[in-house]
Length: 151
Image (cartoon, rainbow, N blue to C red; front, side):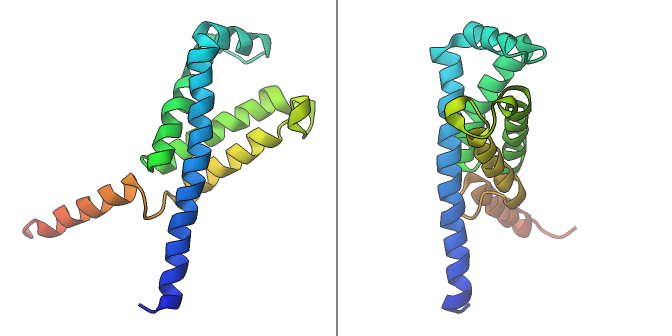
């Protein structure tokens, strides 16, 4: 493999790692805020006040998804599934809460949730990259399959 073909793969791997760590860290922080600072009762009450349907179910689900999904994004575990779920979470936040306030976040708008949703969807579409738990497990599974005798 030449340097010119290896370099883009390396840059892509580091770029996806950076995207996962930043987006995942922000998701995890927001999930922990819902769990620990606002508490589940407070988060549920807030979701109810914002008109989120089934807030008693949705609020804990969102808090847990953002917390543990964020951590999974950081380490690159179940990235495609978690990325899709977090993107859907952000679509819900955008449509149900932020869209009516316009674009700018300082007025409660949707710019921040749009960027987080796009980052999560990008990871769902591309996968985690080579520097991830998913890649490590995939390599390990491939080695195990290759080591098995043919039937």
